[in-house]
Length: 256
Image 1: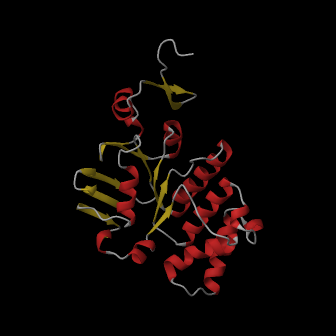
Image 2: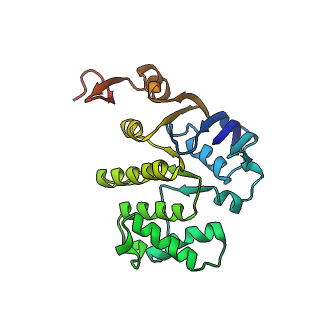
Image 3: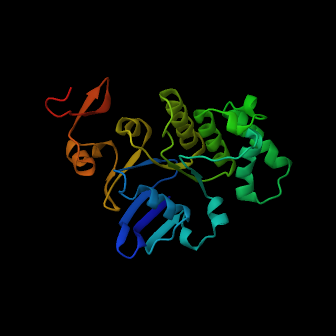
């Protein structure tokens, strides 16, 4: 289980970004962090990943104190898939193999190559193994980023806007692959998303951030008109269509 307790962080003395953020996420659970730009989502992720260190608070995962682990030790437990992915001029196979290096060190062996081949097979990427990553589409590159993260054999995967700048087909592809990891391998996933309906379809637990803290947390019952107005300053209708909860934005009167 991931547990963040009362995290505070500031880039400068007069600019607090996290002001007591707390959340818990169980094994195999998909948690979605929601909120306006500047609410603290990315900074929260960077504290969990060890890119930043909180000024106060606790971060534990699987009973371990993450704040006491080195970057390499965290990489054995947590994999990160950023929105903007820079691979370099490598083949798909070598790119995914880099995930093994992050976990197991600079020297790879037959077991690592076998593991990468299995990951590419499972994700339908076998035909791409020898291709240069830079020549692939955005959706294909995002899928390879997930494959590289899987190669780390993590217990937790952190996604920062995994569907940003992708078309609808590739958005669905990425979310399907991520959900498969949670359901089949028991990997916990923590992700930020902007699309509320996409979040509803993808997530199990939701964390709504405002002013550097998690103001609301829970299941789909958190998607109320009042909470969404508080978090996003928008007026919405929460309704049911074909048995699914759908969020519809109420446009101002006279809007074309």
